[in-house]
Image (cartoon, rainbow, N blue to C red; front, side, top):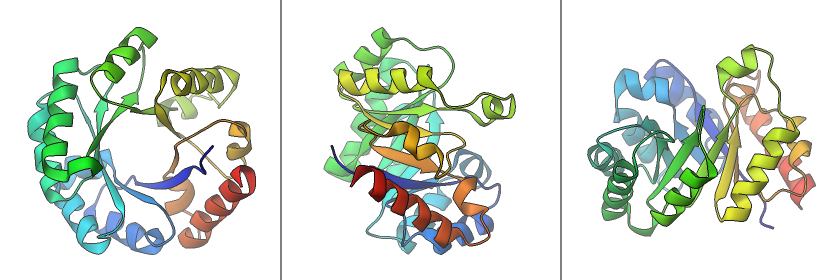
Length: 219
């Protein structure tokens, strides 16, 4: 069982704030995510800046793409994105087009991640695998967390099932260092944290605390 990676989500509404946060933690984390809201505000310029700042890091464009997969993936890949997200309700042709485009630009580094929101089935998940997509992101949405939902056994069971199917599963949504122990013994690919890192008094120290706890639990 490999040690999980740590990804920071730049959940900002402005380019300046996103870049400031990235600079503060970029040397600590493994993966840097251009967040959805900021991408909607400034476009793939955010991806380009992140790639220039961190040429050796994995950069994710969290587009939650639902259509025009090939075009969106090509645009972000050319700016430097290694991975891009598609929403789980996107059609298989959209996901295939996105995967083809990102690999044409980024080679073997290029991957598509399926973001799991709302209703989805394991039958759909098998179709994603059959299409060549092997990354999934299990998500507790901000709205669900604000409504009082918390991580629990039902979430862990779904994560484990996806891993058993052959996915590399990342998890995100209201994570803290205390949450990580819930996943002990689970082969999580990446933990994705946003405000839990970027809004801390010392973001770099917060990111390091995540890394230290991951190392403690997974060795």
